[in-house]
Image (cartoon, rainbow, N blue to C red):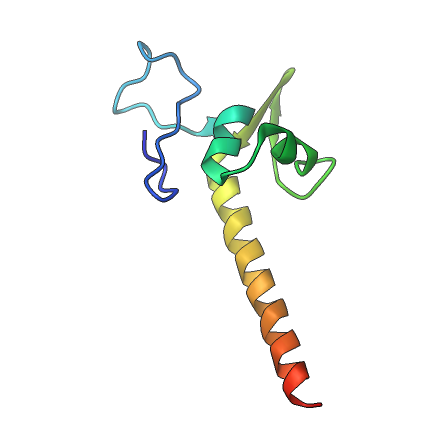
Length: 95
């Protein structure tokens, strides 16, 4: 299932026999979210709420990473880092 991360295939949270083309993937398990982000499961866990800024949703005892929140977080973080870099670059030119 292609979730738009550089064409990387990520397993769904559903069993293959339950997954159909009409079934949207709303949230990922830890291992699947980590694979989609290109990091280890331990790294993602350590940087997920409440230990870090990456949003999660709890469903009873389950922890899931909603696809739309991962995309929003990655977009916001990229914009934040770009702005920080631009500020640092502009400041260095004034010395």
